[in-house]
Image (cartoon, rainbow, N blue to C red; front, top):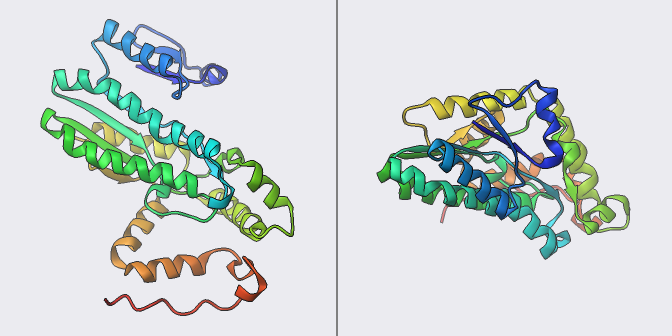
Length: 274
């Protein structure tokens, strides 16, 4: 096993009493660093004949409405959540094809099947990840390579405290006169509350990853939490317009968002019939 983390996070392995052994190597890896990506794969190919299982789980999240995300932040979001895992996949595929087998498990998100306000860039990165993996599922199946996306929803963790703000979204959250102020001050505590009340944990999601790796014919998409299964079901059974209308109604204090003239009761969902 190769266990990786950014250089500054490597001490976390010591905290959990995880060390190197004959079959375990711990290496620094910033997934956005091309040299570090290539070094890991080269070492695996040289000493162990390549990678048989690849687990992609690195990710970051920006909290910002579309208007508050500029190109620099957009690229940073896409680089970690989409471009880098796809590069790791590209590097391991030649070896997997040569052996006619392999497993690729990537941790996606409910954000890859549905989007929330103030999380546009994050959802864009996960939507891209899901689309690329769906294409990959078809492409590598002839070589016996299995591809799966594990989709967690809300998890009981401190992840909501690590969400990044852009300069504009950070100012908006603290400026009462900003047009999007209510978006931020209502969504942030709402997400924190839901995460704190969730029964899912990082450990339970890790168990789903392990079970997915061990399945003979793993599905492309694997919901990892109760709410992920619920949202997946809603998307399948509800007409699309009704689905979006329902989720809009569920947003926290949505009647206070935007100009005062828009603070009226939401009309019924439009007719879904053509």
